[in-house]
Length: 72
Image (cartoon, rainbow, N blue to C red; front, side, top):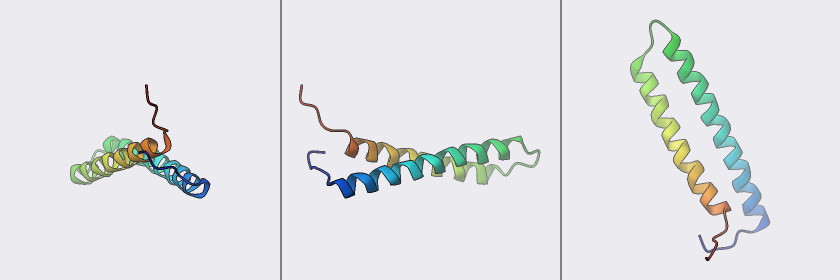
């Protein structure tokens, strides 16, 4: 992105990024716990994995916004 972020926007993106990373870690734990259950609900695991992918995509978007463009 070529637009400059204000300090407030930068802080908001950093806070959202940290929240998304935490949610991603929580989903990892939840998925691992569900997989270990003998009566694991495959549909629920699949939904959690899909949510994890959505979070990963959003994290990548925010990281791109926070990383300055470098012209080589």
